[in-house]
Image 1 (spheres, rainbow, N blue to C red):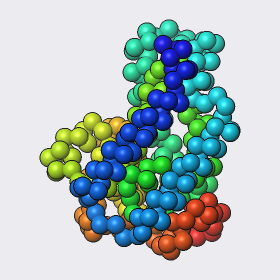
Image 2 (cartoon, helix red, strand yellow):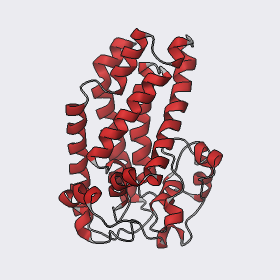
Image 3 (tube, rainbow, N blue to C red):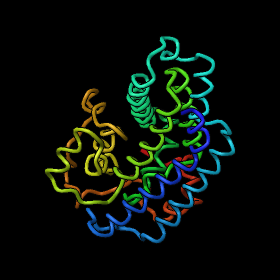
Image 4 (cartoon, rainbow, N blue to C red):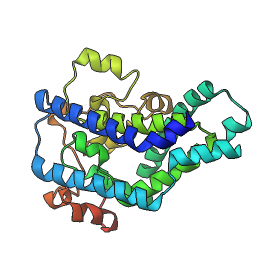
Length: 269
């Protein structure tokens, strides 16, 4: 299993990313939830350019990323699950839950701590929300997030296969819950008991601060309900709500150079 993870990590992650991206983009074109307010051509070109830049940065800064660190931890006996010698399947399931809780906590802190918010707010400066928004993060935030993820993997002692699965699921759910897709109301009510849906996460991208400071989950919706950060619907409804930040309404913030500059600007909530 470990050799399969090592030999196929990049292919599995890239293949899943492309497949899910194409599927969600097609769904958006057939059944959009909202009308777009900004140029899709500009947004997609720059959001995807940021995605490519982040991929290059991660490969440069982290020759051994989260999956590799999971293998090193297993071989070295590091981490709670390895110390307790928890069976592989049980440990993998626990790791998926604990890593998701770590991402929820990180996301919450990136909104509550001013220094982290200066980085994360670039994600919220998108004037629309669709599948490309799911990978629209500042490179510095991506590096910091990877450091936090690696620390969590080592602390937990997560099996390598579960870390790879978590990475794939995290990318998939990020594209899914950022997508501009229409789900029947009954389907959304059922699905959001198990996974963060587009309607649930869209609330988090509202220009209204109280709405933006809700629904922090990426994969599972349970943490928001458990810790009191869950908000069912936006005040103005999904079609009428405004996406983005009140003080970043200029369309120049949709371009790569200005996205990169956002953390260093004084404006902000």
